[in-house]
Length: 427
Image (tube, rainbow, N blue to C red; front, side):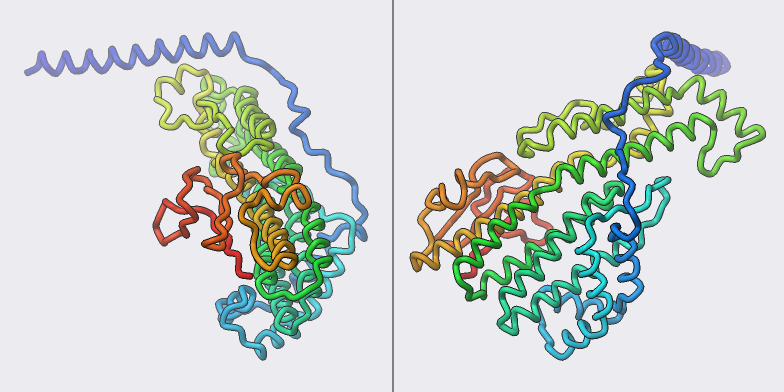
């Protein structure tokens, strides 16, 4: 019995010795190859100096202070913004109560820039973003009210305000959350346009003008790129602070600082960590112009559950953990870009189909009949890089969506993973 215990002790000691050897080997290899700097100037966002009077940010802050959107009425207000359960009296009340807010919103759109103050850390709160989205809901209530008053041209103008606002928020100098909120605001405006199309009775010239106007609001690659640059700057700041022992939740003096410093030298390489973040961003920048299906994701982007030993011998054990903790789902950014592209493309196709039906009294047999007047070629689905799907019989156009499977225009059912991104032709 004692012999077995002794063998067990020796086994544990042997394992510890083996781990120590691996650790020493990893440290030796990594310490000899460590860089002290690297060029990441292409990932630094240059923020323009904007006079206060030209920056819509401050006007929008005033607008949020005038915002009336009580939690008790949120469901009813959202239904108004979607054109469902319409209550004309309630809509008038909401718009009148928020009159000053909407006037300030209009004023902000006349200012040439929208740039937020420079973010300083990951733990900043951007409470104004939720207010900006609510303002877009208010404007969509305005859009619906104009439509129901048979003022379709003004309704289109109102919807375009929302789209323009979303485009500005996407590229306002904030981290990724700003791009994502801006993209969702843009989607609200595009949905308004699609609703108006179902009912609008306007001259063909008005629809052509709107179709051309939408060309000015493509998926904002610059906004996505700049948001990632801001994110990269915050990540580097976190890494640099970590290297100095400035760790959230850990005191910066005493035994904890001593232990941290030892751990940093042995297991943490800040430059290598920054290089991992840089590699991720450069890969995304190089692939934003491609359809989602054409992006070949590197193993480092999709690898999960990296072994403890592999991390240990890398010479950057803590850096890899930090990278995993701060690393967002990079694929979700590509999905968001493609989804926005699909929303815009679908809206433009619907406008072209509306014009075609006005001329011919019927829908075309295929989307190829819209070229070359409206499109140089059949519009492409940004998810799989193939022509957008169209069924005149079902009166739908659709994208295969992020699962890249053509389900024949199947609508999403709750909890189902098998569906397409569907757009109905309600005219």
